[in-house]
Length: 265
Image (cartoon, rainbow, N blue to C red; front, top):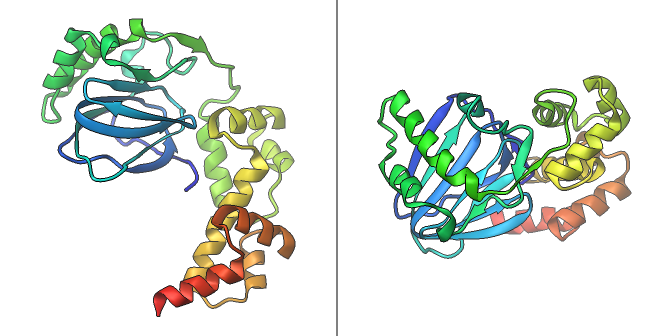
């Protein structure tokens, strides 16, 4: 599953995970995301690096950092997950869109008792002002234990969102890095930087994988000829289709179709 840009409907949300590990595909958004595990373990991948967050540990994910949650085995986890619009914290904390942590993971010794107290007491049902107050307590005690580095400045606000949304809508068309740059009115080198720095793959790889996922869907849900599937998914040649599809799924499109048919019978 390729990263997608998640649009947050609310400025502040609190989730309590009880006796279960969270699973959520790779995504990014403009919010600050705070995870703290009370018991068990929660598996998390941030910017391509995997973390097993144990009881008493946590993580802070800054805006536009690609991350996903996954589970291993059936070990339960009790945790709290907080998402907060960084604009609510403006003027007191660093500009979260200009900085990001060297490591988003926080070990037990880097989480002060005051922060743990707030993490235990923040509630989904609290009034907005109460929840925001707890977040100020949490962030004011956690941030001093995080080493921040300045991000390279991106010239257009929400560029990650604009870019991913545009590619998601037009990937079946003959889109190129040059045409994407022209559409978004920025240099193709800025777009290349976003892909390498935030999506962790280059534009051509991302486009090919997106097309491969769509082709796999067509194979599963239609009886269209593989040549038509290739063309409808946006591939410019059958050879490229076969190569990219095999890299993604470990088998050729024809083998994938045979596998699907055998599974459904």
